Length: 187
Picture (cartoon, rainbow, N blue to C red):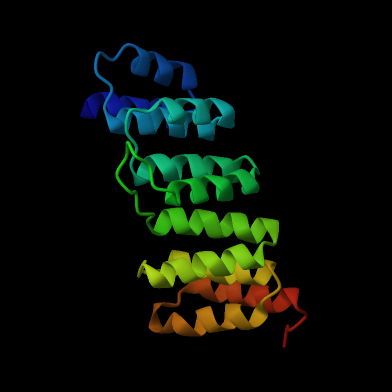
């Protein structure tokens, strides 16, 4: 299984979707990492409808499955669909265990909020992060700053930036500088 999944990921990374699909289709038993790799390959190729179809056919899903498809929607500019899928992820399912989003999932969802200018949804996602104690690492913190800036909430962006404390790096500073520049505060 490991070799197969590695092949799938390699073909996907090289943009060779047909070879990835051939490896997947010829597999006698398809494990979860193999399914995730093909969903991700379709999404990376911009074939998000095929990725969704395969996602819906998966016998089981984990946080990687959900994150691959949510990220695929964002990469394809389908931000509303990304947010809809995140909401779907939160719904209880009779045949699946609850899947808790990780930092990557949250960062991708916040990116969709920022691109849509969906401040209320972004605030809801931030509250979700706080409620479920998702660690706000530098990537997630920078994404929060960017989302708040794009949604017109300079004060919230500043609060997140300040809360990062000693974790701030060049990306966090760059995000905050861009945020301030958006509002004409270049001094």
